[in-house]
Length: 194
Image (cartoon, rainbow, N blue to C red):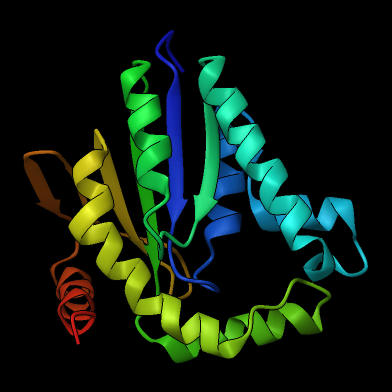
């Protein structure tokens, strides 16, 4: 990475594969990765859900400290809420280059099944109602709010045998790499308004 600090946000619904993608980017760029679920697992490996509140506080501190120190880092979020705009605004004021990598799958049922599979392998759980509620919010918030605050963004599809580039963009540019998957994604954006 250059002298300009970078904030890379890997967003997407629960079970879309955000953590895997975020960790790959962090490793490739040799920069820290912050994720509340990973922090919870480090606090209490046997019962990470019991450490969610403490992990959330530590996550907020870690992200705030990184921005205040102008350090590049990778962070993950469902983006189902609107709190990340504050991080993005702070980082933008400090001269960060901000990129969002948004990972999606084509149905919420895939997300539910993946989280259930993760739990069977000892990973963290997310209540099904939360997964379902966040799925469309995540997609809608990325498209209507967060991508407009980023310097650049990428949409990735992770519902097949490999991750696929769907579209990329910046504030005034959209380049579609896979028309069929982009149409699928835009249909999800439109159905998220219901």
